[in-house]
Structures are given as C-alpha cells and as structure tokens.
Length: 180
Image 1 (cartoon, helix red, strand yellow):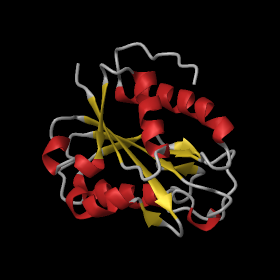
Image 2 (cartoon, one colour):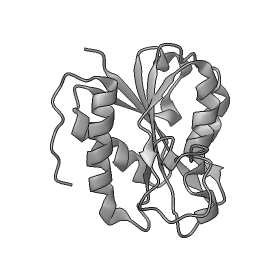
Image 3 (cartoon, one colour):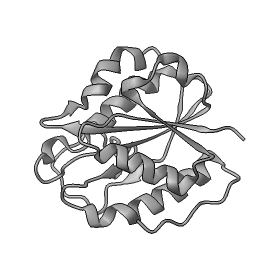
Image 4 (spheres, one colour):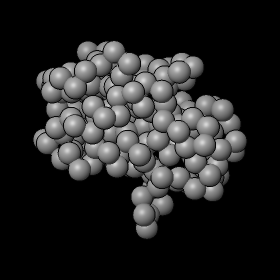
C-alpha cells in the first residue's frame, strides 16, 4: 500500500489542525504529515498520492511557509502523482480572496503533470471571488474550510471530503469515523 504525503503550511495552527483531522479520518498508517516549512523537493518523490494544504492570508496572500517554498514546488515533478488540495480562508472578512492560495497552488502544480482530485462544491459558501473556483463550474479545485466563520461545518465537510478522496485515491483501507 502506498502512503499519502500530506504537506501543509500553518502560521496560527488552523491548517495544521485540519491536516491532523484529515489524517485521523484516512488513518495514521495511510497518511504521513509533513510541514512544508521543513520539507524538501526530494520528499515529494516518496509519494504517488499527495494532499496539499494551504491557507490564504489577508488580501489573497500565500501562507508564509508555502511562500518560501513557492519556487521549489513549481519545480517538483508531479507526473504520475494524484493530488488533492484543501485550503482555509475567511469568506466574510476576505470574501474577495476566499481560499485564493488553493487556486494559486493548483495553478503552479497543474502544469507539472498531476491528476487533481477532490474538487469541492461551492454550495454553502458566501464569498465574492476566489482563484480556487473552477471556471464555468460551481466547484473549487479542493476542499474549502472556513474556521473563522463556519467552524461548526468543518467536521461534516471533512467527513464528506475524506470519503470522496478515499474513493478517488482508490484506497483499500477503511475510512475511520471521527468525533471531533
């Protein structure tokens, strides 16, 4: 069984918390968590399946550790890899930039050859604009989490998305039920 590499960046701990909640649902023996602040390009080669997590700061800015790794991620060979994305943002405070970093991360890796899975419906969100929205569709390129305004919806969204990517990754392990 191939493991999934979950790379995340977190300044205040919310993205890190979501990363561990994803791992709890998919299984600690299935998902290896790596902080992008300590990661190298070479570590991406250890995984055929990836989950990438990023938050959007202020007016559409990248999380600081991902920003430091930006040139490196642009050079990672993603051919043959399957990638799911998730991101955090504040749809009411920064509705013009909601989860923009997820869209930016998608755009920087998509030309490197991965299969992108885990698209997520825009239903239930109130925002003005997002670089993560797929043109012509009512979907984001990955899971959108708003721990500032809709924290009460995060567990259900995580349950649903993890079930979705579990199937899309073709995992043979059991999906775990979590009460968080």
